[in-house]
Every structure is written in C-alpha cells, then in structure tokens.
Length: 379
Image: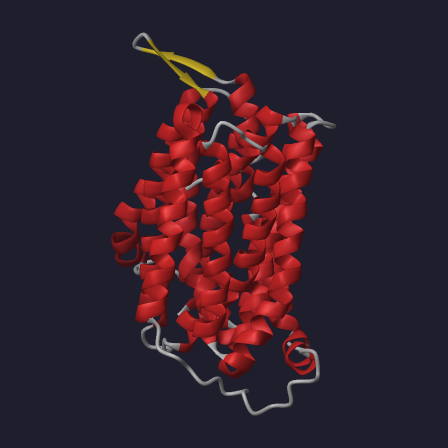
C-alpha cells in the first residue's frame, strides 16, 4: 500500500538521486537477509520464521506511523525503518513462497498459483486505491492503516499456521548454510530461469520508481475541467492494471487453451515489454492507458508458463533455499528500479528505454532456451 509511494516521499524530502540510493540500499539489505532466510526455513520450519519476520514488519511500520503522525516528523528515521522493514521482507518472502510450494502438488499447483496471483493483485489494487487517495494529503493516516494491517496479519499467522517440522531438520547445523546453497546453485537451469525473469520483470518496478517520478514532474491532464496530475495517473494506471488482471485471470486461460502455449507466452513477452517501453517515454494519456492494457494482457499470457517452469526446476526438500534465491529476482528488480531513478538523473528518457528494452529482450532469449529444454512446461 505504501511502499510504491516511498520513492515519491524521499524525492519530495530530499531529491531523486537520494531517493534512488535509499531504495537501492533497502533492496540490497533485503537481498542479504534473504540469503539466510531460505536455509533457516529448511532447517527450522516455516511458522517460526514467518512470525519473526512479520514481527519486524509490525515494529518498523508502527514506528513510521508514530513519527509521521506526531508533531515531530523525521524523514531519516522513516528511511531507517524502511531498511528494517526490508530485513523482515527478506525473511518473510522465501518463507511464504516455500510454504505455498510445499503445500501444493503438480495437479493443483497451476490453479493455486493462479489464485495467489489473482488475490495478490486484488490486495495490490485495494492498497493502491487507498494509497493514491491518502498519500498526498493524509499520508500519516496511510501509515497508521498499514501498521494496523501488519498487526492483523501477524495475528492471523500466529493462530492460523500449523507448526511444521522441516525435512532437513536433522542435518548438521554448523555448515553456515553451505550445503543448501551448494545443492541449489548446482542447478544452473534454475539460475538461468531467475536471470531471465529478472531481466524481464524489472520493467514493472520502474512503474513506481522512474516512471512515477517522471510522470509526477511532467504529466498534467485536463479532463472535463478536472486536472489529473502524475501521482494520480500512476495510481490510476496501476489500479487499471490490477482490475484487468482480476477480471480476466479466470477467463483468459480458457480462451487461450485453443492456441499453442509457446506462441502465447512469447506474444505475452512482446506485449509486456512494448507496454512498459511506452510507459517509460510517453506523456500522452491515451497511449499510457493503451500501454497498461497490453502490459496487463501480457502478464496474463506469461505467468502460467513461468510458474509451471519454476515448479519443474526446483526440489521440494530445499524449497526454502530455492525460494530465497528466486526471491532475489524481485529484490534484483527493485534494485534495477532504483537504478532507473539514478540513471534518470544522468541520461535521457530515450536512452533509458533503449537500455531497458535490450535487457528485457535478453531475458526473452534465455526463456526461449529453457523452454526448448523443458517443453513439458508448455503443457
């Protein structure tokens, strides 16, 4: 709800370069912590790690809410709490992803992941609508709402999750996680998958970094006597993206079943990349709306095949470590999102679009090689 707006928060308080550095450092912290989070799950189970990680989220967001609601507001403490929150995220994400993978089978995994993708988009849409309406004038209430939400999530996890005994719990625990990472890193196809996904989806993280800051500075739209600014436009585009995914997620697979999966996947890649390149450079309202529509359709074409391939490539015994490394995709995408802010202060918008487009095409090439080796992912 609030994280996508933090680049705007720090840009307004300091400047775009500092905002980029802060989000970059926060993402790097999450990356480092996730290296420990995955093996901790394989050794000690999901519930303990999830409760500790969510507890960190509760503490950090409560502090942010308090200092931004009081008469004394500290941007510096807010930045420190953002970094602490990323510690919690680094522990939490591999735990929840591993929990989901270990509790599904090949038969129901595609359905469960589709439902997870659908529900995540619903929550993101609700969060963005609340965030977009509260951020400019009432950000203190936004922080309070998020803190309360984090507390509720912790309570649900405390009462709802069963205590689990990991398969690897009897293994020696003095190897500093070397064994887990040795096994996973030997799976070179899994590493290639992670790189391919990183090179493509990092475009999405430009939406709330470079694209958001650029539109905030450059975009104004007079519509029926009403002025829509860049912040509102970014929120509206994200909400439209979410609504399209929610509405179409359960119908698009049936419609596409009559076509060859490989063709649909690469068509989705093309639409996804093209849409974000338009968002990177355009200020025309109709083009921006058209771009987010084709991005949304591209997402829906890509995700089923991506998730199926991910399931094929990993071993459930080391699912926590696999998910920790796979989680680096999102962390890396956040880092590249931060680099977009830094590059934006140095090079032109056109040059950024060329660099990012070439990177995404490299990801498509790696996916093509993997799908040729694992054609079962296309069925």
